[in-house]
Amino acid sequence: MTENVKRYFTARKTTTPTLAPDGRLAFLADTTGTTQVWTADEPGAWPRQRTFYDERVSFVSWSPAGGSVVFGKDAGADEHDQLFRLDPATNAVEQLTDDPDAIHRWGAWHPDGDRIAFAANRRDAATFDVYAMDLDSGDPELLSESDEEGFLSVAAWGPDGDRLVVQRSRASSDDDLYVVDAATGERRHVTPHDGQVRYRQPIFGPDGDALYCLSDANADAKELVRIDLAAATDADAVADSTETVVSGGEWSIDGFALDAATGRLALTRNVDGYSELRVGRLTDATEAALADAEIPDGVVHDLTLGPDGERVAATVSAPDLNHSVFVADPPEEVSESLDAVPTERWTRPSPGGVELDAYDSPDLVRYETFDGREIPAYFTLPDGVAEGPETSEVPVVVDIHGGPHHQRRPWFRPIRQYFLDAGYAVFEPNVRGSSGYGREYAALDDVEKRMDSVRDIAKAVEWLRDRPQIDPDGVVAYGRSYGGFMVLAAITEYPDLWAAAVDFVGIANWVTFLENTGDWRRSHREAEYGSLADDREFLESISPIHSADEIRCPLFVQHGANDPRVPVGEARQIADEVESQGVPVETLVFEDEGHHTTKLDNRIEMFERIAAFLDEHV
Ligand SMILES: CSCC[C@H](NC=O)C(=O)N[C@@H](C)C(=O)O
Image 1 (cartoon, rainbow, N blue to C red):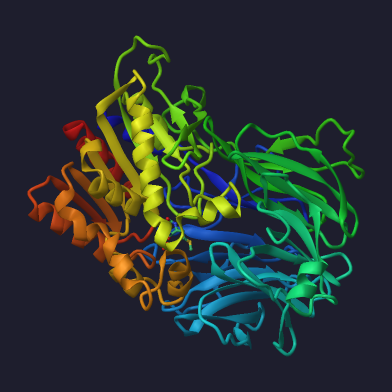
Image 2 (image 1 turned 30 degrees about the horizontal axis):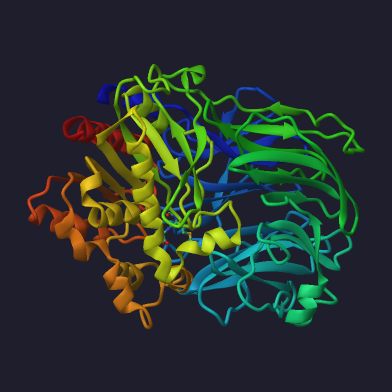
């Protein structure tokens, strides 16, 4: 089956839409093997390639004035993005930052479209400061120096151009917002709060006296809320002045776009992984009139508004739809009575060597785990393997997502179809700790509860083995990043369950991982996993490296030498240890990749090697 891998991985994707004032669209497409900037003048028009690098471009944003497009690019997938400016009229590119030891995190455009703001750890690797840059001068200006290490990003520039709002993320479920004076850099803490609260994607409201953002301040799931800036003076005042504008009930509002000038509003609700897209307008400070937009049953990402404050663009994907850009041009007035807001598909990326109608959609199932909870999961059987007592037994790939604050959703995944067509069932659990199911569920794996999520995986295998279609001796553990840790933990804690295991950029040793991960991310990750100072003994007790002698199944380990999150040493130590135990190990390290495998040739080689590994051992 390895000869088929290329047919699946040549399916292209288009993401990260950004609209120009004249109606044109820029987006990222991986048509050439890495994501580059492309533009399209109208829906379905043949797009034009705008950047031509061997390295991936990570984001793109069109100036609200139209004359510039800014994009980010790293080297060797090391995530140390530099910023660049493209002139869409001449295709000339100017490098705006050139400090390869620093990460430049994209932020926002000044409403006049001639200045940008971003966060960067140029001064100190562990600390992100706020910078502003006049595109004509080309020199970054240190606007606000942080007094705290960790993740910081510029979220938006105020409509009056004299303020910025920045987001500090201290943990997966804990953020803070600050308003920064664009002239003096003076910073005001807007969201003092007790405990952990999420405040995401802040933007100034129509009259500048409030911030709108996604938050779980008032509920277990994220909502669209409004924070009155005048009232938000202390923790109690913030709690009192944070009002819910749109609630998703038990499901999170997980994306929104709001134009301060027009009140145009678009938002997405994450319903058991599937996206609802609703479009309308704020009718007053905390009310909105919205209607459903017509989109395929799948997942919406990258929601954005055009500079006209009316048109909505987003990436949509589904099990049988590769990532495509859709645009809605809503009617002036939208109300609940409106049947639906029409959308138009702007990009039609090639599906590669497999027709989209040959892609199977997963079933959403729930299985009971050790404490009686119901764990959601997507389960797909290969064609021809019907539900029912009498059927063939097939092997199954238990595909564990990373994060852990992440969620597997019904988006387009060629590897799933590859496994299905190779005769494997595919099982994709969202075990405790996953996002998308509220704050309480996301916290169920924090620190000392870490191994409860691994027990969820063991119970998943028990559920699978009870199904007549599944070969109990053909269960594969498969996961990347944090999911790679889950694979290594599962095959050390429950060694008899597995026929083989595939670990992509996984954590093998919590102490060396936290010691060697990027300085800017250590405190954030310690909030999730435990700290080196206080929890070292616990961290060692749950590190798979120290139980590697329990591993019985063949192991495939993949990593990227430039990984700034999970250092490549994690892969090397587990591979060496397992090999020393006489267990078959295959290792694949790409010298020109990092936490993600960004180059198509590398991806094809990786999956051809994994296909051959599984053909041999399962
Ligand atoms: C702060 S983003 C964490 C999500 C990311 N995704 C993959 O699992 C990640 O890097 N996770 C691990 C490795 C980590 O916690 O650093």
